[in-house]
Image 1 (cartoon, helix red, strand yellow):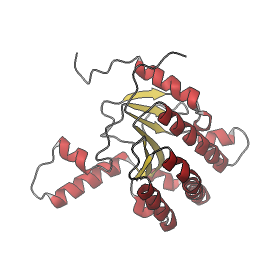
Image 2 (tube, rainbow, N blue to C red; image 1 turned 60 degrees about the vertical axis):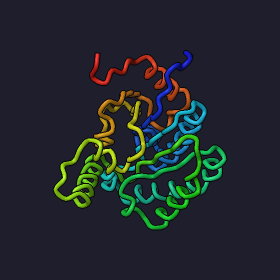
Image 3 (cartoon, helix red, strand yellow; image 1 turned 30 degrees about the vertical axis):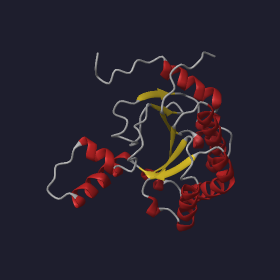
Image 4 (tube, rainbow, N blue to C red; image 1 turned 120 degrees about the vertical axis):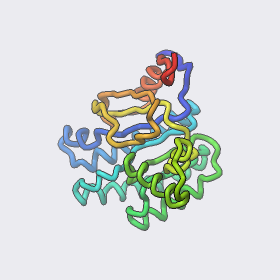
Length: 231
């Protein structure tokens, strides 16, 4: 494989294909989500190895509430167990964790575990892992506009104001957005933040996306010329 000469500061991933991975093997959809957790660990390990400063993952969208209740509850259980299992690794490797989205709608015990993990890693100075949970781009824009209007009556919002009021405030926009499973859309994800993001689509289903596939995405990014609308 080629050397990667240009490492993005922020890589974001739409993790897609867990259900199809499971169904193709005659398994319940939740088994795909379980295997997908292993891909999360592999992606984070590679991000740490490559010194990527920010890795954000689209874990649960506001639209995902429309899935069967058993699947949604299973996802919460998987996340709770992952937090318990991975806390030591995250702290040891200086990974700061942020979980962003409408967290008030998720179960209280999980919300408390999330807050505990964020507090425990708050001073970590390595890679920042951002998990977008109960998130959608439209929701983010609306909540930002509403909060701005409430705190600044009569003032016209600027692009800089929008940056400050989104839930990703303080996090640089993604340089590279990866979507797995062959779908080529962003599905209501970071609509503002991805205005000049480079997109990379792969047919690989998320449970099969490991370090080799991540490296291929970084190699493709390194070959691109980002002009931001300029010559």
